Length: 118
Image 1 (tube, rainbow, N blue to C red):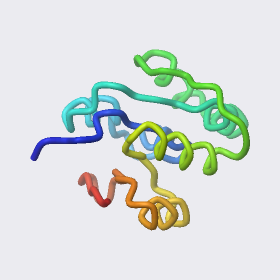
Image 2: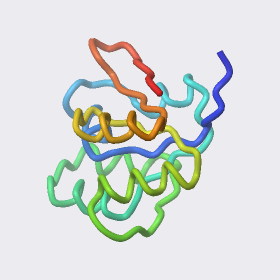
Image 3: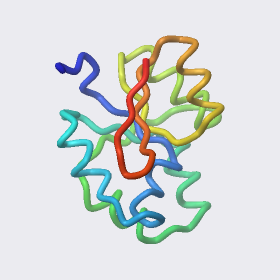
Image 4: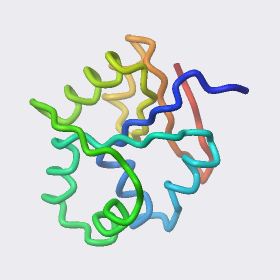
């Protein structure tokens, strides 16, 4: 299935997956066909506040665009994804509902499997 949205915006809880579940999200996203990974500045700040060194080290090690944004992480993600036709990678149920209402594609993991919704 071809992907229209090849840009992926990563949410904080998605960036924590490698530390929590020993899953390489970067390889998974590459396998899924995403060629541009985006982390918004509010998301990086949240990750730094959580203090998960493994996730921070993996973020620095893997290629991604760090984009400055205003407001909360969720608001910034919704606005960026809407304006840039990006898929959002998140585990956050509330954020997924917001994105779904706007028909913004979402990628999530459940039981080690990739789930997509629009």
